[in-house]
Length: 174
Image 1 (cartoon, helix red, strand yellow):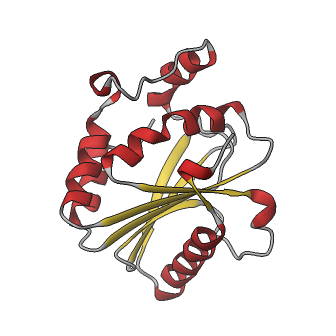
Image 2: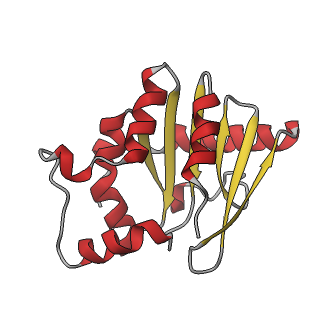
């Protein structure tokens, strides 16, 4: 089960200045990645020169939103050595960057002294937090949203602290 791209697309399209995303799991079991992850484990890699083969609706949405001036940043906190899933994710991140997202990676050992929320989240325009709640094997369970100032501030501070320490995608090797 996954959140509807349509409802999430509406949230993202409504952003006027920024959309930031903090990911903190070492593996996700989201349905729309199962086939791609299996192919990657068998040696398939996306070809950056064959854009038609990897461009997808999510990237259209990212390009649309960043094209209107919204800054999209994604930070990933990862354990090292990284899991197979993180290697898979890293190998395809060039697609997000091509669409306009800025991506950084933070080794988990550098996050020990940071105050972090308990779940991955998106923060839209510094006012609305959407938590993505996953089960123990990484399947999406549900989404919670809040505009409570204290929660918004925690998520904003957490993201900025991670971003400050994290390594830009093009410099982070797995």
